[in-house]
Image 1 (cartoon, rainbow, N blue to C red):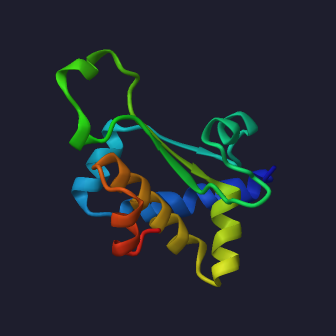
Image 2: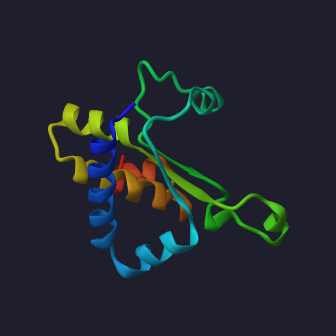
Length: 128
């Protein structure tokens, strides 16, 4: 669990990363909730089939990508994106890059999923 100072520092940095995004992506974040938690829950990891000891889940998009929606989706739960502070910090340290860069990469990765990009597409764009 992260302490309050680290959590606040992360959240302030995230606000800056979001402020630097193009306007159309910032507008998306007004429509799709962005939830930030310290770590993915064990329940979420189990649901996704992720072993938290060997895999760092930095973010998650939940919902139907825009490219796959139909009128039949009107009763579905709303989309959401999640970022996880601890994994983002650990991955940034492991890759020897700034936390803000990893934060931006993770956020753009999840936004990409919202727009229907798959892992291969995101990897080619440098957001894997």
